[in-house]
Image (cartoon, rainbow over all chains, first blue to last red; front, side):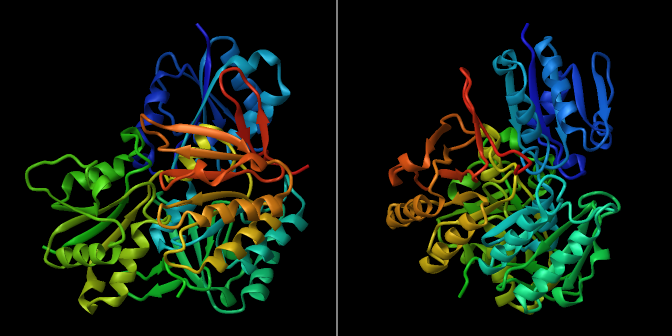
Length: 249
Length: 249
């Protein structure tokens, strides 16, 4: 029997956002690997081994998954959100490319999930309803200069923006610089959405005009969305709606 | 009883990509509105009225949904993919903002779905594994100059790119111009992915070096993904994998 690796997205947290496709693959897995809190979302059962690991060991974890598959296991690599958006799919392919040639014969599937920016966008209304970009603000794996360049060009292009990993304890200054760049480049008071733990019981959603944003409004569990110049707010007693119209005129 | 509107995403086509959250809302709906082929994906049952309508009548459809909700109905507006990405959520909010004040008291929810770019990305590997942008190439609702500006800035920012609505019969020249701009701005031979009817039985996936792309490779049912300068191809007998590493170095 030949093994396989499925790289799946569990969505942002609400179990009702996990696709039936992902559920079906999890039901047949022999081994599940991933970051501890995501593996903890998979129910234990006979015949299934859960392999939780720490953050920042994505390549080790990927090698482990591929090695187990090479030994005939049915391995599922779990990510939060979508596995192809700043998550495990790219890491597994990096490990695959650097690994033994035999791994190239493995069956490898990527199964999409609801990524955090779309869950956050849905909660707020439709801030990404027009052209937008997604930027990982972590500078662990890319130079800060490149992030800054992308922020300035994204503002010039008038994209709505979605920021993943906005702020960690170890490098809190990045998000502060991000807000400075945006205040300088965007000028006007466009809405910024801070969606923390979106779709979970302790979800919070804050909408703040850009000029009033401060870096401490985000942490690593916050998805940050920034409107384009055309993004609008519909004021309502039961919660404002933020949306970007389809038309620019 | 007060009515409500749920604006939901049915995903790209595979029924196993519809979230349980969306299934639950559909099960309780009294009325479903949307573009004919999307409404056709909802099973008929007693107590449910299906209201399919033609393309390009998004505002009429939105008004109809809001009006029915104001009359106490439990209305679901269906989109393909995710409702917040070039789909019905923005249209409903445009109609809401322009409509009677009483509509502001309605309960309105947006339920996310698997958007086409993430389904296409998953099929190809992880081409959106690093920073990326999403652009609607239709110039129905925005001037072509703005699309061109965004394409050039996105190339300068070295984003991977996802193009929705690349090419219609009525304006085939837009995608041809898009490819010309990219060939000029990107220079090197980055991979372009043409994913047609992704996740459906008749899905096709083609990967073509940018220099060899031609406009007739896409139609309105094609999702086009363009790699960044760091996007890589892993050659395999059982199908190549396209992915963008997490690191730029």
